[in-house]
Image 1 (cartoon, protein in one colour):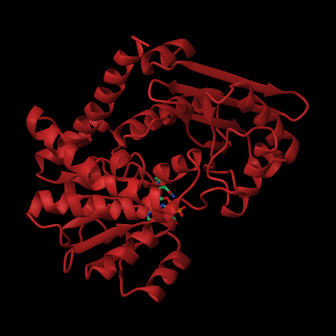
Image 2 (cartoon, protein in one colour):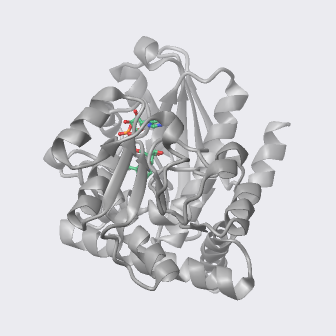
Length: 354
Ligand code: NAD
C-alpha cells in the first residue's frame, strides 16, 4: 500500500517525517485529528522491522488516541510519535533533544508523552527542547504515573458493565480473571479485592505474580486456564489482541472489562462475535481512558481531585455506549466509535461558524 493511500484511508491531518543525520534520528509524528483540541499521544521508541511497519503503527495508534479522547469527553485530538531504532543502541540525549525540537516546531499542535521504550529521564531530555510534553514526574510539576487512574477507571467501568448485565454494580463474590498484573492489573486487583471479588490472575512474569499474591488474596492460574476458568468477568490487562477466534471459541465469560489497548484482534469480526455469544464488552478505549484523563489535567494545572473526578465519568461513558448499542442495534465496539465520531462531527460543525 502506498504511504498516501494509508494516510488518506485513516484520514490523518498531518504526518511529519523527522530525520537527523548526526544523531541517526528517524521518527514519524502522526497527527490524526485536532477538531477537539491539540493532538496528544505518547512517543514510542521501537526497533521496527521496516519503516512501513513503523508508519502503520503510528497511523493506527494516533487514530486510536482521537477516539479515546473524544469518547472520554476531553478537549484533545489524537496524535502519536514513533522513533525508529533499537533504543539500547541509539537512544541518547542528543537524539531525544533533536526529536524534542521537531515536537516544538509543531507549536503545540502535537503534545507528547511517555510510551513503550521511553522513560521519565528520556522525557526530561525531550522537555529540554519543548514544553509540549505531558506525563512528567510529580517532582517536575507533572502528574506522575497514570496507571492508578487507568486502573480506577477500569474498575468503575467494570461496575457499570455489571450494573447493565446483572442490575447491580456490586462485584463482591464475582469471579474475575485478570490477565496481566503489571501496573494497571495490580491496581485494578487492589480495588477488586477491597470489594470482595474472587480474583484469578495470570502473568507471563513470575515476579509480577509473586508481587500480587504477596499483597492480595488472589488465586494464580496457568496460561492455559485463562479462558477455561469458570468466571463471570474477564479483565485483559496485558497486551492486545487476546480476544480472537481461538479464545472466543473457548471463553465462557459473561462480560469483558479490562485495561489493555486493542483487545480485539479484529474490531468488527471479534466485536460481533462477542455480542453473538452474549458477552457484554466494555470497549477498551472507553474503559481505559483514566490515564489520559489524568495526563490531560496537567494541561489545566494539575489537581489530583480534578483528575479523579474526570476518571469517575468513565462509569457514565460506558453506560452511554451500552445505550447507543441498544438503540442502534450494533455491537458495543461500534457504539463506542459512533459516540466518538458523533462528538468530533458535531464540534467540527460548530467550528465552521467561528
Ligand atoms: P505493564 O507492562 O506494567 O504490565 C503488563 C503486564 O502484562 C506485565 O506484567 C507483563 O508481564 C504482562 N504480560 C504480557 N504479556 C502477557 C500475556 N500474554 N499474558 C499475561 N500477562 C502478560 O503495562 P501496564 O501499564 O500495566 O499496561 C497494561 C495494558 O494496559 C497495556 O495494554 C497498555 O497499553 C494498557 N494501558 C495502560 C495504561 C496505563 O496507564 N499504564 C493506560 C491505557 C492503557
